[in-house]
Length: 57
Image (cartoon, rainbow, N blue to C red):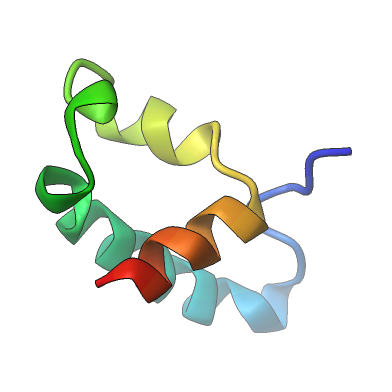
């Protein structure tokens, strides 16, 4: 089951920071994301996928 990207009010600030950081990785992460708009790209990530991208730096 896919988790929602935004979960609680308390977590929102941290999640937004993670999302902005993950967007900054977009060019590094690669080709199969290159044709997707950023908002859609973030919207399709699970928390686990987001963590993987963030840890990949």
